[in-house]
Image (cartoon, rainbow, N blue to C red; front, side, top):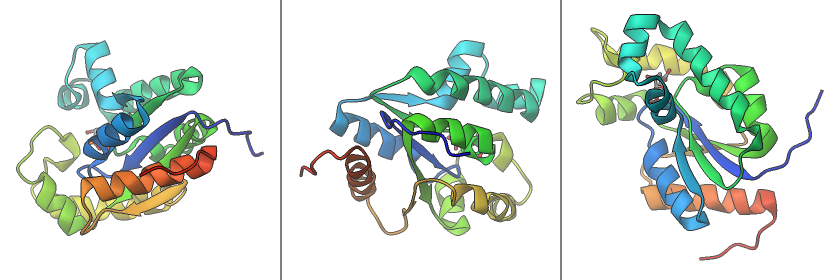
Length: 181
Ligand code: S3P
């Protein structure tokens, strides 16, 4: 069954390290929307860092927090929502997002993602003996889900600004706003 869509927000999906937050902040500035990062909301509501949620309560509990937050978003408007890398893997989350947001998925190769994330330690799923292999396996497992988003944006060799403009263009087309420079 197809659900009617009323696009009032922009959602950014995609793997860890593809630049959702940087792009999202720029898109939000351009549209004069509020920027929201799902991980930040979960951390501020629970008072617990994402990595600690994983170790103390497990990934399943984290996915539940994500789904609860997504369910709340249906009344939102004028927001750019940067989603955690695994959020749209749950088809129900993606369907909910699509009901009110244009969902753009940012894409990068495993090697690029590895280069961008290798010095960071806040992502539990990348704290592995061989993070690059982990990225390859997880990205391959998620590829089909990411491809269900409205727009797939290759971030390789493109600046944050170029990617943001591409997302903006797609958002304006979706809500039929005239494009602006
Ligand atoms: C995750 C991505 C992270 C965070 C959590 C799980 C994932 O968000 O939600 O560590 O499953 O890919 P970012 O994509 O913002 O790093």
